[in-house]
Length: 323
Image (cartoon, rainbow, N blue to C red; front, side, top):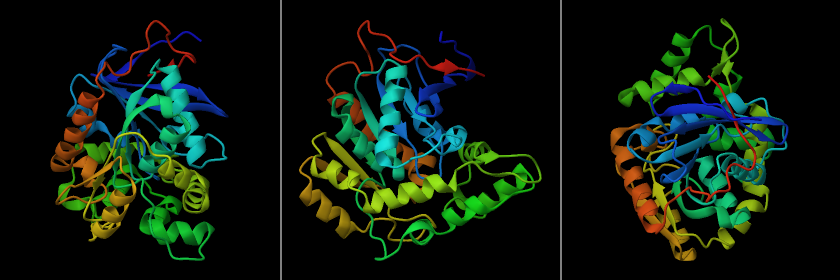
């Protein structure tokens, strides 16, 4: 299929990449030049590629490639099985479609776990990892499975997936009342929540497939992929911790002691705490984005060669790009 491009806004376009079961939606910001510095940005468990505009805007000259993971956003229609290995293989398909051989991989929340597993399954595609408030094992109450496990870990974030909203204004109001979003509400957050809705008024609903969240959560906590990825971690990795969590509560998803333990276990891991942010605002506030992009720039500089180019090879699996 011949590739065509339609710009949605300056520096931003979307495309669909062939993967198992259909096509995966991908957002791209920045230069068209395949030789430009490039990062692969991977969103969280109920999010979408629209979590990344502020990070992309703070990285002029860098190509930011950000998929909607299987079961989320405009990739919500894609079938299971889900799980970290499947998401990792989907990321490899995205890089193939865009002609990217190796890149810096940046993951937020569940996207950090996906990124770690991607680095294990496709080690030759990764230069280094930037893990943002995710990617290290999370403590979960013992004995829980299925829906109970999802709710124990995600709380209201999981409950939201079963809700319906009469219009977009109602969904914005829901998020503006959220403790993690309210005080710092901005245009990026508004666009993020608008993109998250599917359906027809008055029965709009979040795009994320609950089955994907449930299966991903179970695989992440009981499957072998994360353990193997961390045991085999060889790429330079930075972990950025948010001191407040999903509901803006301290101490966040990770305690300082947890991070210290894992820093001691993983020689390639360097930990950074980003003060005065929560799990969301670490990538959706000016202060959080400044800290995140400083680490991304450092990772790009340390790569030692142009990022994202595939000399003369072109895309292995052409992407379909659309309005």
